[in-house]
Length: 337
Image (tube, rainbow, N blue to C red; front, side):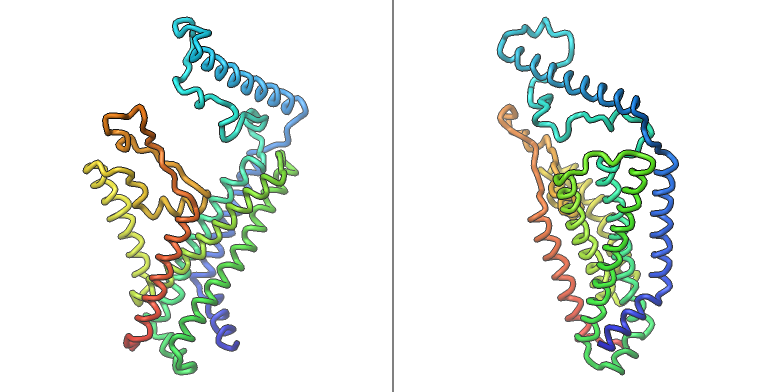
């Protein structure tokens, strides 16, 4: 217990952690202030006009869909159609659309929490993921580089216990901060919507979807925290983690992607970790690759392919687990002096 308390104090006392916390508060403060300044509470007339516009947009979609069906059945000749109608009627089927037009789409300068909560949550998770990776890398990297771990081992000469406690403390601190930041962040924007905007439709489906995104986002934050910690442990320096992530992005996500595009490799995105990170955060991501249909029978081919969060989680957990295992093995065997 004394070791855990000592590590918590060391983590909280690090200047880099304190700087990141200040930047976190500043980023959230600027976002909230900008939202508050650019939003207003709509009048009854504005809401009525927006509802009418949304109803008209939905009616137009239904009319276009019906026109498409009539053309396919031969009720209406193609030459008689004076507007664009897609060949595939599902493209304009209101029942198949992710979201039908709603009043908030036609309210200018009005913050609607139900519509903006998910993009705001993605911004929060992106910052927390960056926070976790950088803090995780610097927390162990600085100690290894400065000899702080050696001093700690003189007091508690058990390498696996020390490294495990460091990792556990880091994950616990990051998780606690993420929960508190999420509550404060989303709560602030909910209050802004009540005072200078519109809450929108906050039903059980909305909260369930937002909660699922938040939970998967927290998993992504913790996974990146572990990766930063593990790579810095293997490289014995904070810069090792920064170099590794930069090298991966440049060499693989950009360079290898470009090479595979030139070589016309099918479904390139399935080889990129960013695709699986996006799938974990969103629940699923869809990609389109025209090369998948370059087989002479393109009429019966669908170039759409999907990555869901379950295999993405398995892959990212496996990668993080392998890095942690390698870090513990290296820490146990290497000379720390």
